Length: 196
Image 1 (tube, one colour):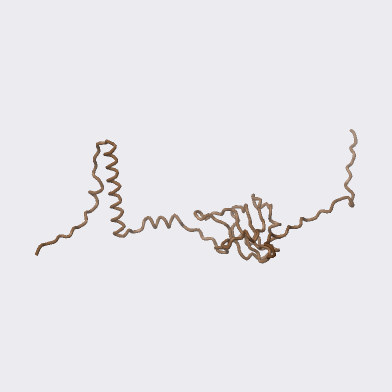
Image 2 (tube, helix red, strand yellow; image 1 turned 180 degrees about the vertical axis):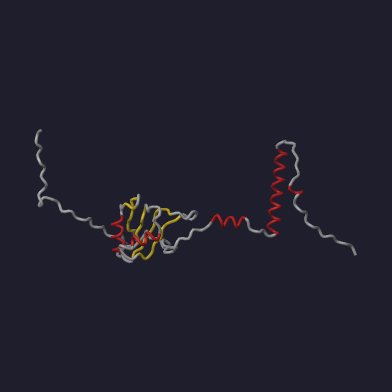
């Protein structure tokens, strides 16, 4: 068996020093203070407001937090915004969490420029999410008791639809007759005037 040459490790003087990457400066306006808002993308399912606040509080105080949710279903849209107490903490948190694997998702994190931060970005932030029972609300609205005026209007519309249907049948040349809805609608009482 031929002998292999042993590979030599590089000398300590020749070895490169490993340095942690220095975070770039946070985006800011000309002459203004840097932004404190961090954008988070690819937030995994089950990682909601409470979990986000608890997790990112390790970097510093989180003053505002908003997770984007669907208005219809209330489910997370998997992106959100955090505002820290200071711009330095926001920069450190964004640098540390960008590309971080959280559950099965690779997070995207960046400090937003002041121009990107909309005035209504944190509207409704720091509130506990309450799911709206839209199906129940719609069921109650649909099944509510109608006023006499509404009942009359619905009956009138049904009669008008039925008359249009009969006209379309006749226009098509079909000889078909049936008892329309007019017979089922109660007739309005008429005032009788007597001569004195």
